[in-house]
Image (spheres, rainbow, N blue to C red):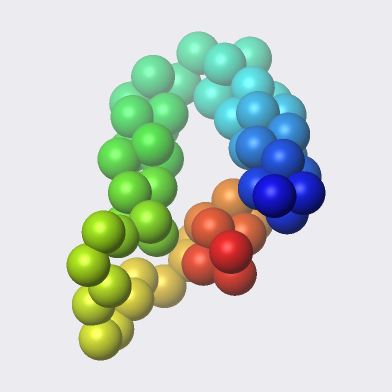
Length: 61
């Protein structure tokens, strides 16, 4: 459970810094649209390749 809390705190800080401060709504939507691929209900044989620390954290969890 602690690992999930660490991920959520990092995600929150990272998202605010990269997308909210810059008002990059298109980038934010693309970023958020990729996250479900790292939390599949039915895992696939070839998972997506993480492109940022948040995705790498989810892939690790």
